[in-house]
Length: 443
Ligand SMILES: Cc1ncc(COP(=O)(O)O)c(C=O)c1O
Image (cartoon, rainbow, N blue to C red; front, side, top):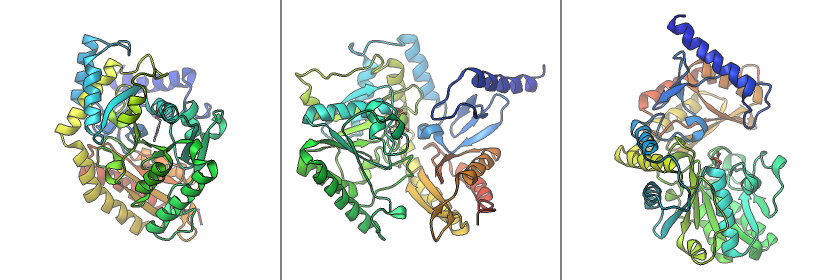
């Protein structure tokens, strides 16, 4: 067998095993993906045969530091030699170092971190802390949100994934700001922000403020469409929470750790949460990890009272070592600054130029390496581009060697924070080519 046939056959073998034995998330199983990824580096991944793709999805918007960052891989290797696992009740140096680095990016007063295996259980435990701290039950969150796939996290979710999983009590939803498809007949960001706050105020009053433990928000709803809130909205939510003794939980699972060009997305919004949930970018998912950063008054609730929650792998050494190395590399290599600069100077103008030239783009919005292009069949009516056309766009981008993040009628432009200007130009050329024919057959 030649080398090429050998590598081709590895790709085929991977597909065959997958078809036979793997059950996939959020999918009907009869229609499997055929995309094989064997390895990667930076913003690129490839299959066994060496067919390369530019990763403008960061997988599930988690590989902020890029694929296979050498110092993170090395740290995992070294930790594996030293100690691969240990119970959460023990004291472990890597865990303390990871927690110290995480709180260093949080507002002053945040001192402690509860570690989880990912984002859903981070939200799950933040909700539990809020309920125990306040003695209240209800959690308010937005319809356009995703908070994870566990009991309370999936019921806090606003999108379709909640409905088939809605078994838990105490969750109420409201509409957050989204000017392009305003629920409030707004025409300016100021109107949208003010009216969304008025709507939330009414929901709180109607639900009974003293029954509400927390408002849980993605600082910037991500999967829902990179919905950057208008100036003043999050500060207004904070004010409403303060008025009624309600806690504010900000879900930074997708938007945190560099994605927006800031360490936390809320750093740009004049708001101080009570609990911050994180996962994804904290170690780019090299080892599954997430957690809750806890403000002192809430942490103090559990000084003498048992916190009734835990996980076998809370603070897992391999995850902790990867967090330490990730956050050190992100700081020393100015990776968050790169996300900001490339967003401001390269991605923003390139997407604005695409929107000028392609009728199919209804709106472009975002910051850092966190953008969405909303595609419409008609700019006047803003009718979303149908699923079949979105499917064709996705396949055409993959054929051109770009891995896109396609959600509903949007392409999310979400490369790793280490992406270069040349890589952005390469992806934009592919978007340009594909969007040129996107409306064919639609009108
Ligand atoms: C904002 C947000 N919160 C929570 C989650 C759930 O994280 P995980 O899949 O690690 O449980 C996600 C996942 O996409 C997310 O985007």
